[in-house]
Length: 241
Image (cartoon, rainbow, N blue to C red; front, side, top):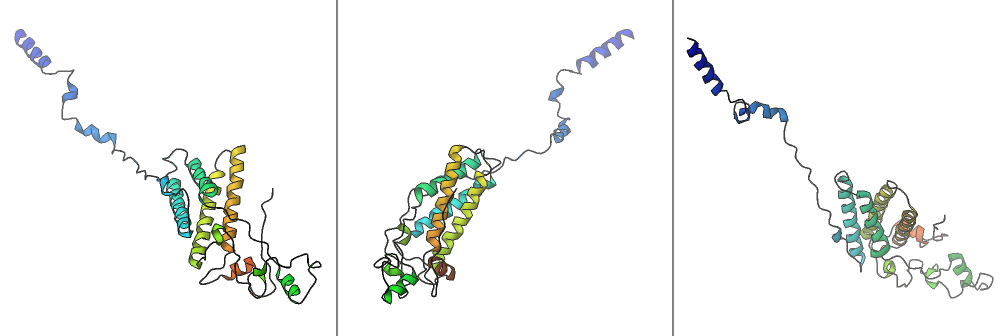
């Protein structure tokens, strides 16, 4: 009887296999405790090369601004999954304002309408400030005629749809730029870039809104540029400290 008990104990010890428990297949239920798998986030590619290096017409300028707006939107939505998203957007918009879009050139001297009327009635040129022969295109007769200028923004006619789209995109990109530059630590170099970039956007918007659309002129543009009928003069603004 004792020998039988000893043999039974040996058989029990030989079937336990205490060091091979990880090979058992009846413990698969514990895998549910790990939870579901983590799906990696989808990061859309940011193709900065879509922005052209230069533009030659209004369609090219619109394409550059549209691509920039789309890229800034994609980067802002993926800011938590992309490094240096603020600096990337700021560099893109500064590059567009400083190198891609041509800045407006100064317009020829303008002769105020009241001076043109006085000169037409034989007024003294010296008393009127020496305006005779200057700004003939801004007289009351041809107030809607635009000046001849080699500037990119005055070289050809502009339609109302193009004018509105340019102003909309400039406004959108200005808000993008304001968001990113106010979210970064300021430095002397970044302050200078911020001032120049905003000044460039302001100059571009001023040149666009000052144009008289060839198909459906805007009353605001006519009033702003001084081409509206009546006693009106053009508006302007300066960028001071």
